[in-house]
Image 1 (tube, rainbow, N blue to C red):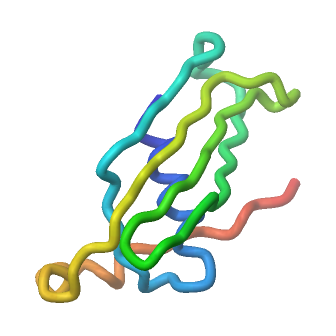
Image 2 (image 1 turned 30 degrees about the vertical axis):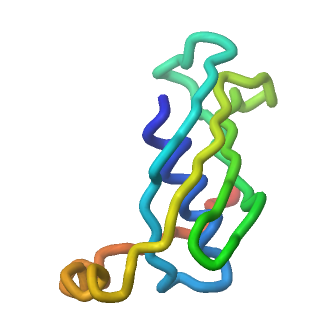
Image 3 (image 1 turned 90 degrees about the vertical axis):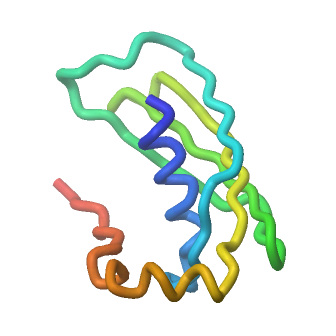
Length: 102
């Protein structure tokens, strides 16, 4: 449950700058109820703070009717430029997909 919340929180911080390279140093997740594996779920996230080095974002996982399953707060940091160079070959495979509408 924590992995999709963390990923969504980090992706929310990339809005406006898809080349922003961050890694999570802390994530706190809280479960509200068991997360079902059958029905569709809704995963949302929003940036809370975006500083020059450290950021904060929140994410929530809900049932389709809006009932909360889990929530998380992630604290990522920017990866130093000299370390980012080692990941350039993977960059073409990182992308966020637009929301599908029914």
